[in-house]
Image (tube, rainbow, N blue to C red; front, side, top):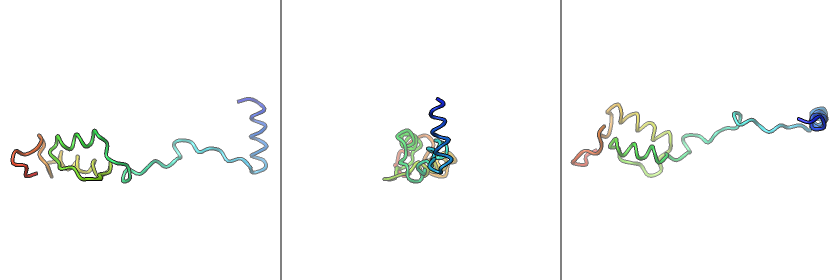
Length: 85
């Protein structure tokens, strides 16, 4: 950083006019309950035999994947032949 930029920042800070841009880690990300499920999640749910919901969030897709892998829903090898899942 140039000395002129440092002086400008020091003046702004001293007068109370300084407000730095927040770092990327401080900006709140979009909540997983608001973000739509990814294409990869949707494809994986289909291979697990889970019926897809209309407007599924990333968080909901994750819950369904966990449940299907534990055998709580769907069929772990794909669709049941009779379509009962």
